Image (cartoon, rainbow, N blue to C red; front, top):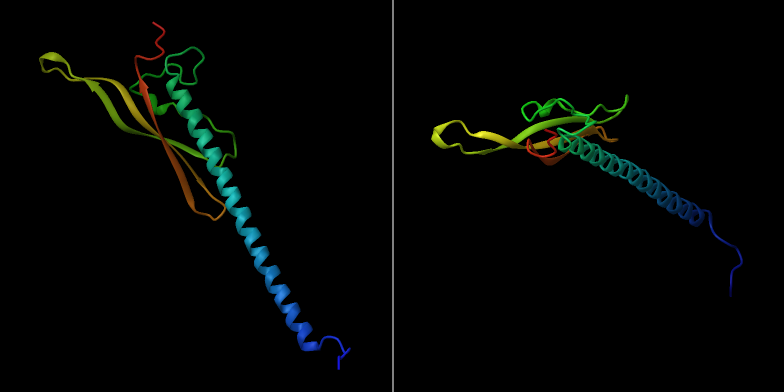
Length: 145
């Protein structure tokens, strides 16, 4: 004999609880994915800022350079101006000086520097993040005179 009574109250309540738990889990996952997507986009933008800084450094001694008037000795002071409200901070670190030995025991002449361009920011989780790209700048490239 088949019963046509339908679902009991307990069965309906259990099914509602299962559906609600699945929905809450999906919303948490969606929120996590949005935060990670935003952090990834910030990392891509930080890489673009670092590449622009490297381009400015490698344009040393060229016409209309943003580093006009800078030499290899003070190249670390040539930092691009970021727009107001930018979440990024650009710093440069001397990684290595490349020099050539001079005959007669004189001091070696530095003709290039390896500079680390670091871009840092605070992500949506409130954590400090940074990327660092190396750049080589030579005083013999792009000379005008």
